Length: 428
Ligand code: ATP
Ligand code: MG
View 1 (cartoon, protein in one colour):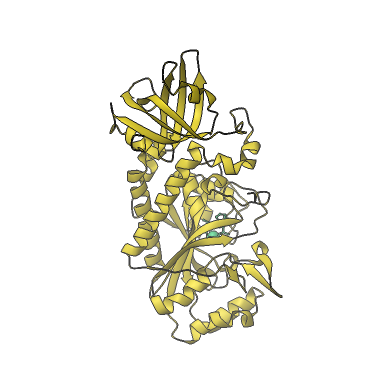
View 2: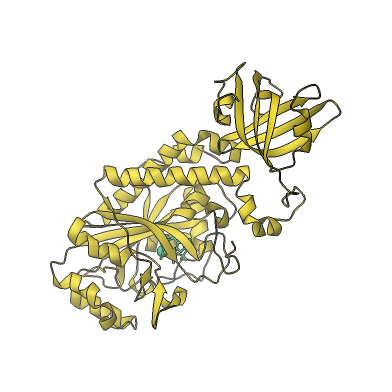
């Protein structure tokens, strides 16, 4: 058999008039008396293959069913009519695994396709989304590394809540009650005292009952934390990261965006600096659309969307009321009612990251815990960080899937991750 060639190489015009072999799966099949059209897919693309009745491949090609695995040998021809502009005139078909009738077909409902996730991941859409996801991860790591951040690995089993108790997943850990982590922030805070600039890309778990296009119960969280820094440093880092990732993807994922029909221009348009508005300004801008909003209200998804659609690009909202923020948020000494907290927002999705300065003063931290009904005894190790060489520090967390929903114009966050976990979905 001729050497195995990846389909993308054929589509790039590198094999024209050559005899090659491909290996993959039957994506579509159409048959007439004299000719069989096959679309074969591998990890890199889809190619049209024709089998003439006179070809020695005819008999095997006739047996092929959708999603059968095979190798196929033939000669590559340029053909404007073929999807992708090239086709293979097949001379040999070798069936590797003959497929039973494939359950996913055009007339199936979205619900059904979701139930068949393990098979749907073979679709072009999911193949392309997963590739972009991998590129986003790579670009993210590259940026952190360029900026001298060390990647660390925090635990997923934890003994005390990071975010509010309402979205905490509990579990039995031998004889003890533990939780699944909602964020790795507190652990990154430990590590800055050793490594200074740290980041992690790890799962976070939230028992979110609401079914929205931006919530999963298990999502991947890009989190950074570093010492000797303030709110301005934080926003500069976040916009630098976002710009680097968008520009990299605009460059490396053109084919994927084209095939998915996603708008790549919005990524190219991302440039630093991002607009910044205070929470107070956000409330003023939103009042006409939502008169019920007053200083102190939390911004809901609808509010964030109205605001974000106005900007039409990523931007920051900062200086939130302390009362709606977690115990670890640092507050202004002259204005303890305002917390140094910042959200990055994007059109259509609203919030994609939250960050801020962390309270470094032990006594204020204890007071904030008590105000929120938390027991300082449960956070002894966290308080130790303030006892031994405390430093001003900042950090943020960005949801990888929310970022992808925005980048790829996805309708729903479940398509940004291969095995989505929601209230109702956890199979396979
Ligand atoms: P929301 O108000 O939208 O529920 P949050 O403010 O509770 O989000 P944070 O605790 O600030 O979320 O988490 C940091 C980031 O993690 C968010 O900005 C978002 O990008 C992502 N994130 C949070 N919860 C989820 C979730 N359930 N599914 C997917 N991503 C999430
Ligand atoms: Mg948040």
